Image (cartoon, rainbow, N blue to C red; front, side, top):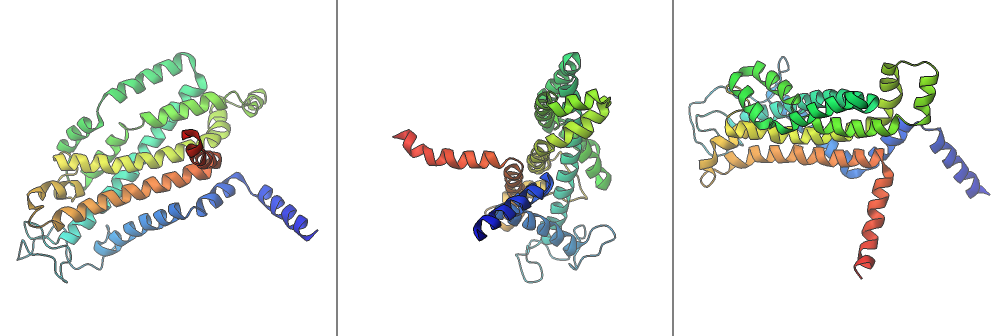
Length: 316
């Protein structure tokens, strides 16, 4: 009797939770995703606390733009990452490059998500000629290589304003994948009963799109935006590696690797520290994206596990 009562109470507790609470609970219970989120935020907080950001002062005594009297020195207690070729503290350079990478990934993912969601929502809801026109525009943008556009923009801008402009314009070149995903979701959701009920009730198209359909497609948008953020880091560092991304006096992890290619054999720390802070955030974001996907669609996770167990029998 007691067991039955406890099971009923547990079931009622689950049913009383909102969809958002259930998603959050599933995400929190994913240890890999939670550890990745903590590490991702922790790395950002560490970089800001170390060298500061804007009006926020840092505890690190050296600046990323000021050369010191000695150059080419190996890592020491005073300079744990060593010094650059021109004598700038390398820890400060790496932390500033890391800050720029975080900023660029947030802006690119934000702009790309907003543009892609709007385009996909309109195309999927209205269908017909609207869908055809928007999808052909999407195809045109897919053909245009983002790295070439970024190279052009990167050469035209410089300084702190250049980081903003580069990130925003790159965001307008990476929205196509999200647009296609959102369009597919809208094509499915627009046929549901709750959408038809909203039409009968006299709701406008704008209200139906943003009030009724989009909240049901938010899972696809969030998961896709995390993958876009991870790709944004690699895009920015790739451009900077080629010399077309973030320009001096700002620091970029990709440019630090490019400048120290010849030092790989003699001073490898000048190469590995930027590489570490490029790969680590990208991996953490992907782990977070996997956790969000499982939280929004737990059935996919269960199917994956069941399929894995069946594989040995299938092979036999």
